[in-house]
Structures are given as structure tokens and as C-alpha cells.
Image (tube, rainbow, N blue to C red):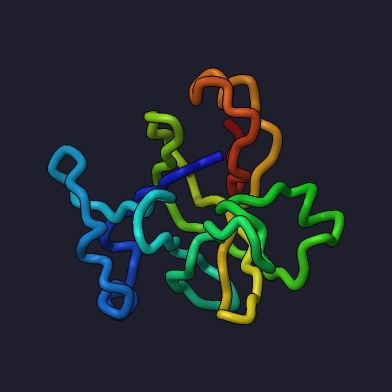
Length: 152
């Protein structure tokens, strides 16, 4: 899985930053400011490219009971079997991912799905069985994000 992402300030339009009050999500990494989005942050949200635009959407659901899947991730297999509908493809833009204390490089982004809920669209990262390298890097995490044009 991936519980956080980072991207340069220049990757998000000023209007999106202002609308979602993202100034509090700016962190300094060795003198370079970046936006960080973490699963434990409140509110839980992620940037996502979908439906021809870039926006910030709620990230998954922390409610154990409800119409949406619990968590911020859904398996690629779960989406493929049609049990999660309606969904639209999306991409979470990121240059770094975070899981279990480890930051790792991301080339283009993480594949995602956007679920249209009654309360509005919600984004979930897609996951697949973890590669051996990813498991070793993240203390044996059994699942990993589905990357865009990248294999770890």
C-alpha cells in the first residue's frame, strides 16, 4: 500500500491550492518545499487527475459501515470483477510515495479509481500484490500501489 505521497509545489495549480487550503500541507525536504498528503491527515484527501481535470478529492472512507469501501485503497482485482461501481479511472500525481517509514520514488503517478458517492466523488488508490522488492522495502507489506508506467 502507500499511506502518503509528495509532489512539488509547481505540480498543483494555485487555484486548487487556495480552494482546498493546502498551505498547511507544505513540508520542507532538504530545502525544497513540497506538498504531502498522508492517510492520517485530517481531512484525508489526495490530488487526482480524472475526468479531464486535476482536483483534490476525499481519500477513501474511514467509516467502517457505509456504502463506500473502508480504507483508502482498493485492489485492482476488486475493481476488475465489477463489484465496485460506478468507478472512473484516475491518476494520483506523485514523485514520492510513503509506506511504513520509507519514502520511495514514483516516476509518473499511482493509478486510482474515483467512486461517485452520494456525498460526491471519492478517490481510492489501486493496489496489486506486492513485488518482492516492495515487500522488503516496506516491512513485508502484502500489497503495493499500481504505478503508472513503472515497476518496483
